[in-house]
Image (cartoon, rainbow, N blue to C red; front, side):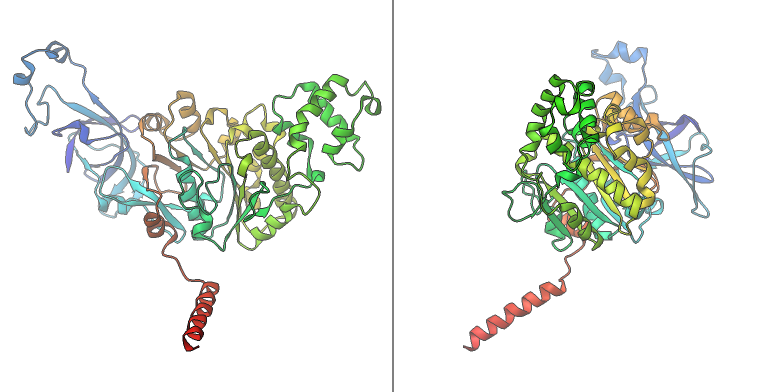
Length: 514
């Protein structure tokens, strides 16, 4: 279990440990390590692993003499002897008082030559807590499999984010988080399902979605008329506001934006979309609207006016909120429109301002967590003033409306919004600016920048008040066995299912009697 001894350290800079391993490759950044002091055990994470820069090493490199001079594996000095050795930099995360077992923040350092060892299961069981509303998302790195729990009551009390580059595992982690919210019934979720991942089955890889595991608590709406199995999603044009069009039709020239507001102020009984279609320069006056800007706006609007869900009829929003009040969650399927970013921007923004108005003006008892993928499209500093999402992040947690960001470019998310995040799930990020933005304001940010910059896909750094200490977690494989065993539990037969089975049994018995 021993990996080395402390040879230097400071409260602010961390602990340096001379390694005595046969092979330094046994250690990885983010692994948990215990340093055994006299009064405390120091629970640490590996921040870095280094080989010392030595002149003699440079002279021996490529030489026939190095095999004779450098001790082999298994010697008491470790793999490299007293001259050639590695060090690890450890960052204390928590102190464990030896006598009482009480936990506290690191405010001291252990003596010279204190032994460092791999953390054992008993150590992490003492550190992490399991609550009535906690669920594991994966295992801790560097020890025998131990499933680390996240408290979902705390997680869903404030805005949080999932950051990670494409292919890092954001969708899998997001599914596990959504299923955990439903399992512990700490709220409902609303997901904009652009590529068909969250319904019954994923169209991409055929993995099971939220409705498969919770068929009676998840409702699917679809903006695609060809999806006959889902409830139809309809937006009444009278609900459209100028900002919805500005966000959906990004890169509008200032004159076109001014035209939208001018028409909105003078639209009378018409909805905004119809008013723009019918508008003329003669009606509005050349002082307010330029003909070229009006014609350009109408051309840009043509794509939206052809959308099948934008029509008068039974607006879907009241029905969706009625289901949320009943404890159900909503998956909004985009079908064939999943690749159209303007449609996503348009719908998400319409629902955002309606949710904001409903929760802040009337209040709702049922907590709703809105998962916003491609969050930077809405929260870029240039766009944020036209959306309600920045207000959702800043203001609505006291109204039971929680925003969850999912994004691969945190550097493009408004800094004020990022400052509101109480919890962060940070997967692999390669751009240094994105790493820094994802971790802005985090304690020991230098260590976490190193970790996030080196962790592989399907590994996440979890930082915030939903977990006892910041932790690097190997995300569990998303399959039936893991989801049932660790997340949703074994399926419980509902009363409706019992009635269905009873009717089926009666039919069988009647057939047999005949």
